[in-house]
Image (cartoon, rainbow, N blue to C red; front, side):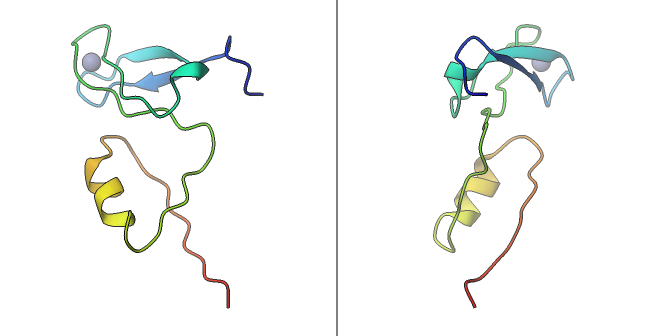
Length: 73
Ligand SMILES: [Zn+2]
C-alpha cells in the first residue's frame, strides 16, 4: 500500500481544488496547482504526537485533523 507510484488527492484549503500528490511526498507541504497556495502535508500513517508536540503540530497544520487521545493506563 506504500508503493511510490500511488498518488493521493489533497484538497487545497484555499480554493478547494483537488491536487494529486505522490506517496513519495509524504510529510512535505506541496503547492496547489491552481492557486499556488500551500497544501497540507500528506500523511499515509497516523502521526503520533505527545503533550510536547501536539500544540505546534495542530497550529501549523492547514488541513482538517482527526485526533484520537489515549493513555497507557
Ligand atoms: Zn488552491
